Structure formats: structure tokens, C-alpha cells
Image (cartoon, rainbow, N blue to C red; front, side, top):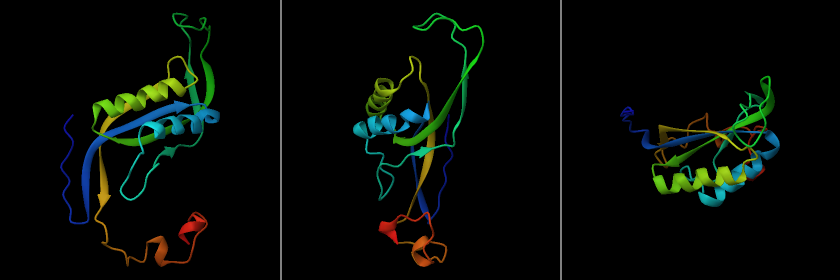
Length: 147
């Protein structure tokens, strides 16, 4: 897959990997902790950058060829989807995926890895933009440390 070249004076782009992991919500923090133990998940001036999507439903039917017996029907498990960016580094990505396997409660976790581009702001540019949270009245979502 060839990624597009996007050129701008406002931001730069970096090639990398976007990792998606489906996991029961009760185990999401364990997975993120395992990932962060292997990779700081740095995004510019921030680290530990990840996303947890809204709860959804994962469906599957065991065929009986793994550890678990076959199920006659599809079963449903409430899950969330975690996602984060990794630089293009095969060894580092392998260690992160290994950490997910080690921490995940499933025999066959759903882990998707896709090539992607991420954008990075040009530091110091646009700091007086009235849309930036620091240039307007504090909103509920802004962490207390940044108000």
C-alpha cells in the first residue's frame, strides 16, 4: 500500500502503524498498561496516547479447533476497541503485539495492524488561534492541570 504524500507548512506527516485491539472493557486498562510498558506511545509533546472507542459487541463462534469447545451459535461479548500509533519499527511493533497477546484474556485476540500516516503540528505555530482550548474559557473536558 502506497501512502499519500501530504505536504503543508502547518504540519508534517510520519509513516507508521495503527494498531486496533478488541477487548472486554474490564481488561482495557491492562492491555494499555502492557502496551505502554513496551512503547511510550509518544505523539509529539505527549506520551501514553491511545484511544478507547465506545463499547460495542464482538461476535464469534468457536469452531472447536482451539482451546474452547465448539459453540452451536454465535456468542456475543461486550467489548471496546483500543487504538494507537506506532512508528514503523518491526522489532518494536512485534514486542507491542506480543505484550498484547500476553495480557489479553482471549486465546485468539482480534488485533489489526494497518500502515498509516499521522500528522504532527509545527511547534509554536498557531498558538494564538482562538479555537485552542487555552485561548478560551475552560471547558469540562480540559484536564485540571491545563486550566
